[in-house]
Structure formats: C-alpha cells, structure tokens
Length: 388
Ligand code: HEC
Ligand code: HEC
Image (cartoon, rainbow, N blue to C red; front, side, top):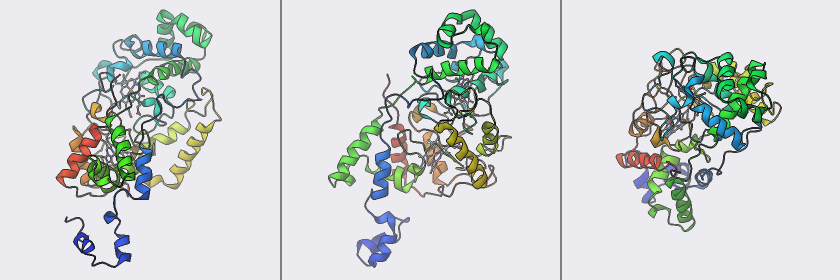
C-alpha cells in the first residue's frame, strides 16, 4: 500500500474526520461522481445517431452503393488501393503501425478502425474532418493513399455505378459538372455504408450493468468487475476521457505519445485548416450547414484561441469499443499491445521533449499494482462487441 501511506491510520480511526474526507481514495468505490461516470458507460444506441449533414446517411440504397465503392480499387489513381485495403479484417484496420497506399507509400499515422465510426463526431487522429462523409474525400484525394481525382471518380462512377448514382442523386455522374458535388455525393454514399459497421453489445456493458446492481445492493466490492472498473474509473482516471457510450469524450488531449514527425502538432495544426474547409459541416456541401454542427465548429475555433497550448500535440480520444481487435495502438501505431498502452499511462506518458506541447494535467504517473494493470487490460479486452 505504498500509494496510500495514510490508509492504515484511517482504518484504525486515528485521523480526524476532516482529513479523512480530503483523502478521496479511501472513499468506498464508487462515490457519487464515479457512479455518474459508470452510468454513462452504457452500450450505445443500436444505430448511430442521425447525421443531418448527410441526408443519404440512412438510405439502404446509399449504403449498398457505398459498400461497393468502399471495396473498389479502380477508384484509386494507381488502380490497386481501395478503402478496404487499409480498413480490413475483423478490426477494420491493419496490423502494422502504418498502412500502405499507392505505389507502396506509407501513411503518416496508424489507421483507426471504421467500426462504430458513425458514432464519432471528429475524424482522423487530429480531427481534420468533422463528418464521416467529408472524411472519405481525404484518403480518396491523398497522393499517399488513393491518389484519385474528380475526373477519375467521374469516369469510374460512369463506368460501373451510373444508374445507382442517378437513382440516389438524381443525375448521371457524367451530368454532374460540379466536381465538389460529385465528391460530396461519393462521401455521403460511403458514409451511409460505414454507418452500418456497428459492433456493440460487449461483455463490458453486461459487467457495468451487473456492477451497478451490486452497488445498489451494497455489494460492489464482491463483484468480479470491482477492481477493473475501479482502476478504469478511479485509480487510472481512464474514464475522465474515455466516457459515455462510445468510451470517448470526443475531445483532443496530449497524453504523451512519442511523436517527432512533421505532423506532431496534431489538432493544433489541423483544426485551422478544417475550419476553413469548404467540405466541413457548415459549408455549401453539407445538407444542414446551419444546424448544431456549425456550433461545434465555433466551439473548436474558440478552444483554439482560448486553450491553444493545451491543443499542441493533442489527438482525438479514440473509442475503446473493439480496441482488442485494432492493435497496434495510438496515432503512431507505436504500441504493440494493450499491456504496452497501460505501461505508457502508468508512467504518465513519455518524458517531455518526445512530442509537441505538454501532457494533459489529467495524465500523471499512476503507480498501479500488477493486479490493477492486469485488471485494466481485462477491462479493455471486455470492450469487444459481439460479432454479428
Ligand atoms: C493507404 C491506407 C488507407 C486508405 C486507402 C484509406 N484509409 Fe482510412 N485511414 C487511414 C489512416 C492512416 C487513417 C488515419 C489518418 C490520420 O489520422 O491522419 C485513416 C482514417 C480513417 C477514418 C477516420 C476514423 C476515425 O475514427 O477518426 C475513416 C472513417 C476512414 N479512414 C475511412 C476510409 C475510407 C472511407 C477510405 C476510402 C475512401 C479510406 N479510409 C481509405 C488509412 C487509409
Ligand atoms: C486525458 C485524456 C485521456 C485519459 C485520462 C486516458 N486516455 Fe486513453 N487516449 C486518449 C487519447 C487522446 C488517445 C490517443 C492518443 C494519441 O494517439 O496520441 C488515447 C488512446 C488510448 C488507447 C489506444 C486506442 C487505439 O485505438 O489506438 C487506449 C487503449 C487507451 N487510450 C486506454 C486508456 C486507459 C486504459 C486509460 C487509463 C489508464 C486512458 N486511456 C486514459 C485520451 C485519454
């Protein structure tokens, strides 16, 4: 009990009540705030919330066109790379730190899974897309990934998908003279497909429900999930950021992952560009440009001004759902296993100088015991959703 030198004192009642109150780690787990966090961790809705900026998002015809486009290497400039090339297998990612695009080029970062991507609100590790449909344009046009162009897209859509495209969007691809509308429509069909890639209902959800019942019954400590959930919520502070149904706060934080690359500034660099991007959710290609989406953009913009330094080297909190299926980890793909992830948090991130900016105040050395580390890894593994 090196972490709590006061513990034995308190148990013997030698401390004054006021002092005991200030030592929150001695309170029974969960306290009121922790209970609220635990209650937030429930399974997400069966289908992702509607995206008003994509009016095709829930149309089965859009999803089926999107599925075919997702798998079509003929959309790439090099002819052999599709979205699926880098988002494949059970985890819908790759098992190497970086992925390979056109002409053998390596991506700058680790591909996140596209499973459950319909629940997110920021996309890419640095948040440089704010909707699932506009995200799809980035890999299509990236010279490293698919190296495509509006001309190539129009030609391929005309060759293989002309009637399906017209049925959805009202014009043949060859009649769509505005490149940006063509691109946005492509993205909206892809997003409709990605919204169907849902994997929820994890053992974790059952454990949380049962644990909450045990809390009600005053039997929290004897529940098998006690140590894991206590480490996740209290000792490890994981739920400070990995909370809510998606196990993400959808915010950006610097947790001290080693990154000395040119793009190490993360959201601090990406956000400005995204805010001026014509394809963002407040732009002319959005189906709800003045909806709540635009207020999210305003908030990001004021965050950049008010807490700029905190956003240096900060990346999006990823969902932890299905995390066991998506090794390696972090935006760099540098950590091979969940055990490695726990070790990084345990030491409070890498030493300063290994990344842009400074680590978030929430990230501190944890001094976890071997049992706590094991329990935490078990919790992470329990977040895999039931296979469909
Ligand atoms: C060459 C590999 C490669 C290809 C091809 C590729 N991706 Fe990705 N994908 C990545 C990488 C790498 C990232 C992370 C990039 C970053 O954050 O800088 C990513 C990120 C994403 C994300 C964001 C997920 C999140 O949680 O933030 C989505 C969604 C996605 N890709 C969908 C697609 C779609 C749709 C296509 C095809 C149009 C595609 N990808 C093609 C490698 C690829
Ligand atoms: C301050 C907010 C914050 C806290 C606290 C936090 N995380 Fe994270 N987590 C993040 C961010 C941000 C990333 C992505 C960082 C990056 O790639 O640079 C991340 C990444 C991860 C990943 C990698 C996921 C992937 O797909 O690559 C795992 C696993 C993870 N966290 C688990 C945990 C655990 C376990 C704890 C508690 C010990 C924890 N996190 C505490 C914000 C947080």
